[in-house]
Amino acid sequence: MTLKEQITDDMKAAMRAGDNETRDALRMLLAAIKQVEIDTQQDMLQEADVLAIVNKQAKQRRESIAEYEKAGRTDLAAVEIAELTIIERYLPQQMSREEIRALVTKVITTVGASGPKDKGKVMGPLMPQVKGKADGRLVNEIVTELLTE
Image (cartoon, rainbow, N blue to C red):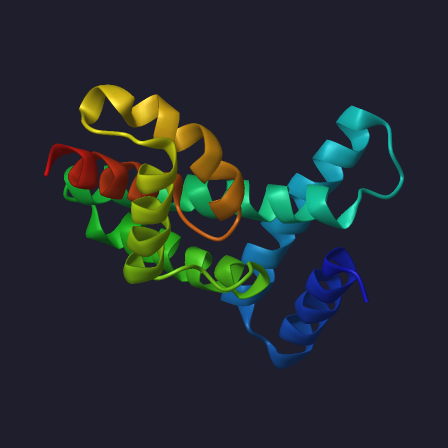
């Protein structure tokens, strides 16, 4: 079963169960997938493309949560948090901070980075290794932290 089919089946199950929150979040996710299918004129996207869309939707929710919390709108942030929780079910297991830190340390040693000016040398080989498995902001934060020590 493809990821898109899984999301569709879960949306149908949420509709039967009367779970409007899950149903709405999955509808938005399927709408985003359908929009990309229309824009690219493809009937069926590759699994990696669907995963990238899910990842993008999760990232948008994270950014919205940060903005709403900064503006003091905890009510809107709570809605986004609920949607993010539902969307994250379809993402691969995210790397922990410690796993990212170990990987960053390994890459820093491999490329011979010595300070903040070498951030680009570290991020280049690092990002393909964590794509889809870690939030880019967290990776950036850890790289900066380790290079300034």
